Length: 177
Image (cartoon, rainbow, N blue to C red; front, side, top):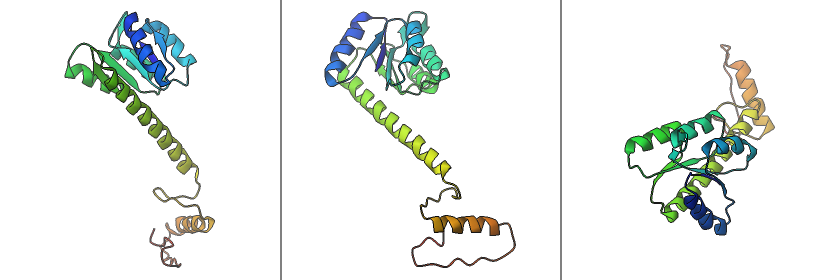
C-alpha cells in the first residue's frame, strides 16, 4: 500500500494501524516524489492519498496516475464534505472517497473492498484473454471439446451459403447453440 499525505502524523498513524495487520506501507509526504517512485513498485495493491497536497490536489494526482497507466485502486481522503468533489474524484478514476477525521475501521474496509475489486478485475482480464485465445470459438460460446470446435468451424463455413445444415447429436450436447 502506498500512502501520500503531507501530514507526517497521518502517515505515522496509517502505518501504525496497517503494519500490524500484515500490510506493507510505503509513505510519501511529497506527491511529486510519489509519482517518481510509484513505477518502481509494480506490486503496489492500493494507493491512499490526501486531497490537499503541496503543489497539486488529489484529483490531479489521480489523473496523473491514470495517465501513467497505474491500474490500482486509489482512495482519496479529504476534510471537505462535498458531493461534487466525490463525483470528480470517481470520474477521475478514484475507487473511493473518505472524509476526515479518519475512521480507521472505515478505511480498513475500503481498502479490503478495493483489494477484492482489484483481484476480481485481474481475474476478469485473465478470463477475457483466455477466451480471446480460443480459436474457432463463437462469441459467447465456451467449449473445450475439439469435436465441438470442429462443428463451430463447419458452421462458420456453411453460414454464408444458402445451404441447409443439419446438426445431429445426443440430447444435451449443445446442438441448439
